Length: 357
Image (cartoon, rainbow, N blue to C red; front, top):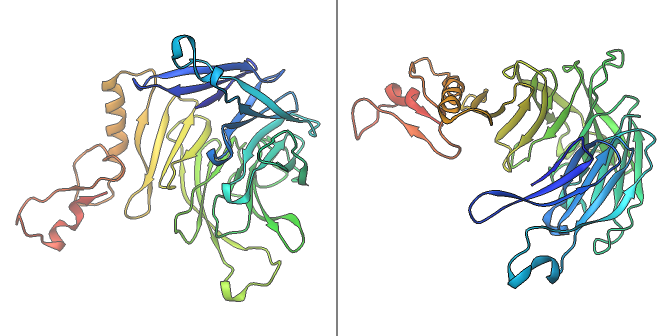
């Protein structure tokens, strides 16, 4: 795990054999507050990228050597060395987000800045990360605070960007751009007008067989959108941009404060959000495709407080009229079945409301 902070430093943490997190590297990465840190896909090695208010994005690589891996007496060293491979300084203002592209697009890196420009770089040699020429840049004409690649392999490259500008005259605060291979440029395909408050984070969900995309937005509230591509495979012109049917499938103020970050699990079925209330909340859809909070994580609370908060959140997971039992939501991947009569036989009409996932 990598963390960044306003004291200009980046830290890397490893989980040891006792399941304790140990800081294995810490260094001053920038001359200003470090806004974001992100990992490249492990296929490309141990590679990080950071961005800062100092107008730079930097690519880092972990030094791999025997001396670095072993300490006195052959014991494994508790600290690692990360070296700067390149510094990307094309931006004239603060670089507010940096994200590596999905693995199938190669070793590309997208950054956005407060001046409203998105730049996409690509490593010319994945074995030598010192050269990252700009492949494309486009101006969104709005102050940018965050971006997210769409990880779907079945769709042309797509990026969502968000703005934390307090000026509402520009319209929507979330824009979606798609790569037009025929025109060899990125073009805007959608503006999300449903979100008008400053946006702090956006995340596309991994798409494992869905016919639509999921996008989580962190602003004053947590918003989840579905974007369904209206283009039909048999009616697609070369170079034609996608058209989407955008639907808001959830908007939540459970944090009762600003939502700062959102993150999906690897299958895109569970969403985590963090806010100014000091909590991390976990969300998932029930069998009616209604998204609910099923767990609340409070770092400063004791076990009983955390369990109470989780039970309160889990009670909202049930939308079945026949259920009047307050229960904590089950862990992902399990099913609870409750029957009151007829065992081992099941009456569908009587018992269908007593099966929860």
